[in-house]
Amino acid sequence: MIWDFEFTLEVMPDFLRGLWVTVQATVFGYLIALALGLVIAMVRRIPVLGTIVHVVMEFIRTTPLLVQLVFVFALVPAGFSPLMVGIIVLGVHYAAYTAEVYRSGIEGVAVGQWEAARALSLPARRTWGAIVLPQAIRKVIPALGNYLIAMFKDTPLLFAITVVELLATAQQVGQASFKIVEAFTLVGFLFLLVSIPSAIIIRRLERRYAAV
Amino acid sequence: MPPSDTPTNARPQGGGAGAGGGPLIVFDQVVKRFGDLTVLDHLDFSVDPGERVTLIGPSGSGKTTILRLLMTLEKVTEGVIRVGGEPFSHMPRGGSGGLVPAGESYLRERRKRIGMVFQQFNLFPNMTVRQNVIEAPVHVLGIPKEEANAKAEQLLDLVGLADKVDAHPTQLSGGQQQRVAIARALAMSPEILLLDEVTSALDPELVAGVLDVLREVAESTDITMLCVTHEMGFARDVSHRVLMFDQGQIAEEGTPDQIFGDPQEERTRSFLRSVLDNGV
Image (cartoon, each protein chain N blue to C red):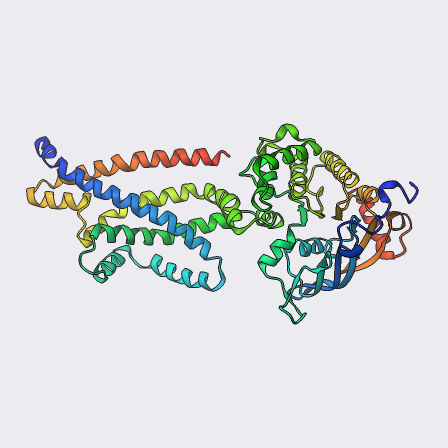
């Protein structure tokens, strides 16, 4: 088998467009997962509402992402951008995981910290914002980082709702040209191009926050 | 054995911060249960403004629970706690004169006048010493930051840590952390200071520094102190009155000289013996 360089160059623009979709889905989906997961972790401490939210999140965690994507895409009215739907579903799905990560971080904050905050009459906003969350989040940065990479690797599922990201591009190009090896090797290479730097950044963050 | 009326042990005569000269803190038939375990059993006692009271007794006798109830870290099961004549654990119900368990905002308002120092220090590790001390004055009392900083520096000077304002708690020894915790509690200018076994988690050589700071606070302010401790020497020097607890009730009370010099109850005698023998 001989690698076809000409072909590689020819399809590169399509691949980069696919990669861009992948990156968008990952970044925006991850931002949703980070923010929503935090809200869920905090709401879970409220008696009744917390239990309801917990049940919903358990449901999301125990059903496949692919099913959720297809299901939600079928429900939303036509005209919604498939990428937008994909980002939201990815974000909500991963929020169910990040919420658990945040929860473990919050529970890891010593009871004495809550008591000291209470003894100083600090309002809930300061207790959470200045004391509990800074300590909790620092501890869970590595775990949150792992979900960024996991999410990145889940983006090809968006193909199921017609989003043409990197892997879908490769499939289309590969089938049209019969250059399957080139197409998929290129995909692997481009995935690595994103995930290796991300992993390095995450590792740096971990080291920086673990030190304190 | 010093004479019984050294100046620091003179009991304050009325006045102070309490409404109408009455007691500042009143426990009225207070019961606290954790499940089936009764920790405080229909407890009655009161503390006058400016009075310094030490609570002693075997572990599990309910001393710490009293502090935690006052700090509203626990809720009373039965009975009422009053501070400055106002119900504290409960709040008045509209018009009827009845009392209902206090809501969170009512508690937060009342809690401001009480400060607490914990056995485990409980400094905020993500903040510097200065930030620990100014956090509540700025965000609870609304004091301008410059003013809070000035006061923090003054308090840190009082506890002998003026040079550590920008350090993080993890860089300090246990004794230093506890002195910061004292400064943090005092920064709120509380009327009442609760000390919960503040030297129990310290290495022996660090205990004296913390106790010296507290002696200084006791002598230089008219702050009302409730102190749970196993440091009998400190209790003797600083307190006006000692309460000996056993099984959720006051077994004996009196001046430090009465309790330490001439205890009447066998329970007090055996407790003091065990504490002194172990050198704690």
